[in-house]
Every structure is written in C-alpha cells, then in structure tokens.
Image (cartoon, rainbow, N blue to C red; front, top):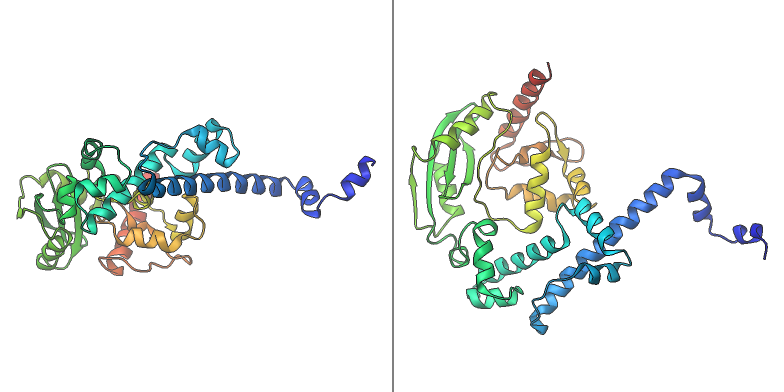
Length: 317
C-alpha cells in the first residue's frame, strides 16, 4: 500500500488537525485535561474502596501513570498545573472531605478517621488545625470548644463584623446593624464554647479590612481559620488571585480549575465563603457579567466592585 492511499484512508478529523495548528493544540490540551480527570477519578475510587480493603496506603505516581497511560513525572506536572495541588495533596484533601462528612453525620472520631482512610488518629490531629480549623471532636459538634472573639465597626459599606479564633479570622460579615451580624455569627458556630466581643484582640484584623475598604490597602493579608472542602479551597484560592478591579465569571473560574461546566459548583463555593472581602467572592459574576446573588446583598457587591475599580485606576496612574 503506497503512502498516498494510507493518507486517503485516515479520518478526516486527523487530516484537519494536521493542517490546523490550533486544532492540534486544542486536542493536546483536551488530552492533558482528560489524563488529569482520569487521575482524579482513580484517586477518588481508590479512597472509596478503602472502606472495604482497609488499605490506607497512598496512591503512588507510578500507579497513576499506569492508569492514565502517562509517565509519572509528566502526570505530576500536568496535575499540578490543572488542579493547583499534587496528586498526593488531592488524595489527602479527598480523605479530609470524607472525614468531615463522617464527623458531620455523627460518626465518632475513631470511626470517621478509619472510614476516611487515615492510618491513625495522630495523622488526623496533626492536620486538623489547618484543614478543620479545630480538633476533629470540636468540628463534629459545630465548633464546640472553640472560643471566638468579634468586633464591629462602621465601614463605607455599612456595619462590619470581624470574628476570629486564636488561630485566625473565621468570619467576616457586612450589614446594616450589629444585631443580625452577631446572630449570623452564632448560627455559623452553634456550639462554640464562647462567643464574645473582643475589640482589643480584633483590632489588627478590623483595621486591615477597613483599610482595604477605605482604599488605603489594595491587599488583605490575614491569618485565616476556616473550614473548607477541597473544592471550596481551590475556588477560594482562585478568587484571591483575581486582581483588584477585575472580575471573572463563575464559568471562567471553573475553567481555570479544569472543570468546564462547573459554574454552579463555583457559585455554591462562593455562597459558602465565611470571610467576605478577605476572600473576594464579590469578584465572581454571572456569565453575562451580572452581579447575581451575594450573601450580604447585591448593593454591597456593586459598591465593592465600584470602589475596587476606582482604586485600581489610581494604582495604575
């Protein structure tokens, strides 16, 4: 068979791709994302199967590479580019999600730890402060045992409430009066050991957020103490990457996370953000640029974006 006849029998799509570099690049990107998706699904299946096998061992890069037909180190690079974390970190986050689910459903700490695939309780307690914001036992009881201080102050957007544990800021809200804001804080942490006003302890955090709202500080850099699933954490990290004065649609954020079609999930992650302004969920908009919903009101969202756009203009001059 001569070469021309071989070419003639190739699919039209392949011939088209050879002629169009953009088509080849698109196909290559699609293949890379497909490999990452397969790796994610494999990790999730492996962790789910741990309930039956009792094997808490990590998923190795070599194992993932065989599953996805990609060299281990190339897969590691693709995975980090698409997901923002390594396969091992993704597996750990999946296990932590299962732990949270078990704790919230009433399973004891030991049972939830085992079901999530952690080899020992010590591993969970080592990671709990960062991943849960408190010990697993406290998380299971709605923040029971947590001591939370808060402070309120007038701001350009209305009344501002900032709350924190000893580890970092855990709640930020905006409203017309202190009463509803304090009530919302109590609903967020229904079983905290104590929630009390502490203006002195919150002075630095309050000043940092007010400075941003008043145009004196383009960025807010505060320690946070917040609970998040792996997906919420990725969305919130992406929100913090949006430059001052700019916005992204929920769909665009989903695309940056390698999850086209995940706009609704991104919207839900924005809606559950407990620290308004610090994590700028107000910079996420609808597909047509509309403001859509905002926990503290569309008027507040509009004013935030207007102020940030004006501040960005000043910094550019």
